Image (cartoon, rainbow, N blue to C red):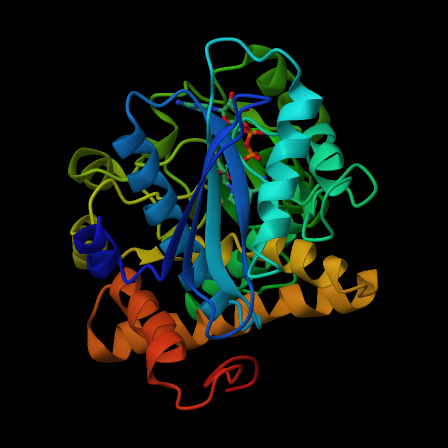
Length: 353
Ligand code: NAD
């Protein structure tokens, strides 16, 4: 166990079994040097406890890197609930989870993730203050979309396009769910031409109708000749094969873990395609959740999300100047914040630098 924690530099692993509800949950806290660890709670059927532990560790590390690059005073953490074959009372289960979160005294703040809903967070919030994404706070997806939109404009600027008038810009969006739909709307309103794909035909039809978009097959959207390919559906979409087939200048989308393997970042760099690292460009939702939890106003949240474009510009310029994949530069920049700063709660780069 400690070997796994050492490799991922994860500081804590907490386990809970609640006899009354049958809750089996794990909370991984990667790092709290910059602040309390904020990250979602997923409820999934795992094949083994080991698999659940690995998932929690991997996701908690990702949250630390995301918060560091987002210039937020937060660490990274994640909770996983091992989904039982049958849930007898979901409210009681999430109340027990809320008590588990509360026992950590604020070192970990929870949020929605795969399989969890605002109702689940409402139940957890009856037991703890350290809960976000309740039905009172709302859906972070439009803010994630706004961050991706901001990042797309930063990429376009680097490629010499106007970032205010997108009329000559063609974007291919893969996945039209909560984030993809909102992104399509923002792009359409700025004049961009859209090609879209989703395995869900009703979501596809909605975007075609509302945004005058062209439909493409889900398995071929990445091959569309366009300026920007925007993965907003699945992770691991960028493999050696799909990267070879890309017909765009920029890849910028919300999906988590877009690179199937770390070396895919090098392959995309070799193809001279600008790749916006996923955990930077999709941080708008985290910014919304974190700032709203602190009581920030909408204008302040939107202003914060603008920083994604500034950080992305810095990062992509470093990538070009140092001839290094943007994915590696992102990791280095996040690690600079996480490990090299001498003071806690101090972020060493960010907006305007
Ligand atoms: P979602 O489930 O609402 O939407 C995903 C969409 O992708 C669905 O419409 C689904 O039908 C579609 N899809 C799945 N497989 C596909 C395929 N092979 N081809 C085309 N479409 C496919 O999820 P979401 O909240 O919109 O999130 C989208 C991505 O962004 C996810 O990877 C998520 O982890 C990531 N993300 C989301 C947020 C957020 O605020 N919701 C924040 C950060 C990252």
